Every structure is written in structure tokens, then in C-alpha cells.
Length: 165
Image (cartoon, rainbow, N blue to C red; front, side):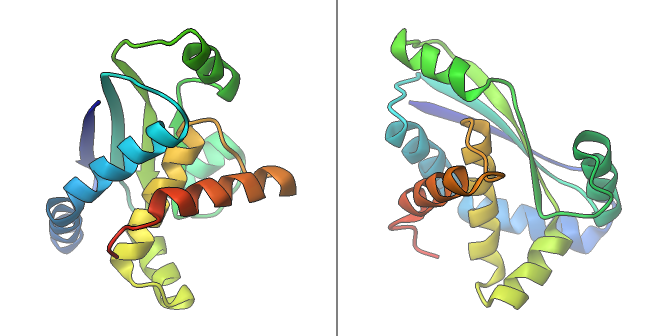
């Protein structure tokens, strides 16, 4: 399975661009493996998967969060899936083997940095967790209902299992 991830940023702050680029340079291989593992755990055998992963400022993520979720506050990650969980299940049942884009993940490094300190996880681990969290959303998982949240958390931990961060 080929993984193609487009990394992009709107940051104009040089230090944040450098930090993001360094993170991607260091963890690109790990991110590719996490995406592949997520798809394998979900039973997909796709030749190529395309995902966009971007970072934005705190103000930008607040605006996006407000526009799409009607939540007027910054957040750490937002996901924009192309398919519903039901559509993905049908593709899996039909043994879909075409190249596809499954959506975009938007990260806010400022919020992620604060959470890393608050949770004691470290920045790199928190970034990888947020990417995995976003991937789960792209695969149709959610955490609004307690049962769904539990199911999503189990998948996140399975994907991260063995990750060296």
C-alpha cells in the first residue's frame, strides 16, 4: 500500500515553520507506518491513499472550528473526511482497490504544545497522537457518544502500539 501525504502550512512565523518541517522530516516514516497500520487494522487493502496534513495558527483553527463545527474556540486537530463510515464499509465490502484521497487533517501546533505540557506527553508524541486521532476521524470514527468514544480510543491505541515515541 502506498501512502501519499501532502504536508502544508499557512504559518508565517519562521520558528513554527521550522518546527513543523523538522517534525515532518523526523517522523514522516512513522506517520506513513501509522496510516498504513490504521488501514490494515480496518481491513483495507488500497494501493495508494492520499491524506492532506496541514498546520494553522490558533486564530485560523478557531475560525475553521467555528465555521464547520459552530464552536468558537481553538482546538488541537480538525479532520475533514471525504467518506462516511458507511461509505468506507461499502468500499471495503466491495474490495475497493483504487487510489483514493480520504480527506484532510488540520493541526494547531500552539494548542498541541500546550496539551503536551498539560498532559505530560511531550510534543512529538502529542503531534503523532493528534495525527492518529485525525486518521480515525477520516476513517469514520467519532467520539461524541461514549460508546463511539471508547471504540475510537481503542483503535487509536492499537495504531500507536509499538510507536517509538
